[in-house]
Image (cartoon, rainbow, N blue to C red; front, side, top):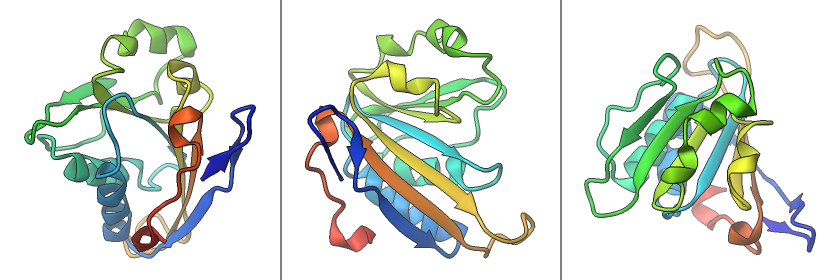
Length: 170
């Protein structure tokens, strides 16, 4: 993933994920790459695997779980168990806009934690100059956990400039 001088994202990575476990495994591999101050914005269909991917991110970061959707509590903090950054897991689905996201005061922990915002497209980009965007989509019936998913991963901003995914992710 690289970007132009104006910080526009370029060269997204597209992955086919056959199962929810593949989605979780992708999250674990990405989580191992994340560091304090990173912002991950997750978007996609209902049931596409945003929380499943976050479970993998948590595994890769080594934070305390369980990781469940924070739809009703809006945000949860999962402390590191390995001396790394905490995970701040946010679900912006029920938020009415950027002002409500600002009310969560995420910038207070942004520099020392990894912040993951589900349903964050159009809201969370304002939180940081750099972000990793992951777009997930399902194919087939919502009742079939074995159905395929696709992931589109794009880095934006200076943190992700020149970044490429390791071969084992593609």
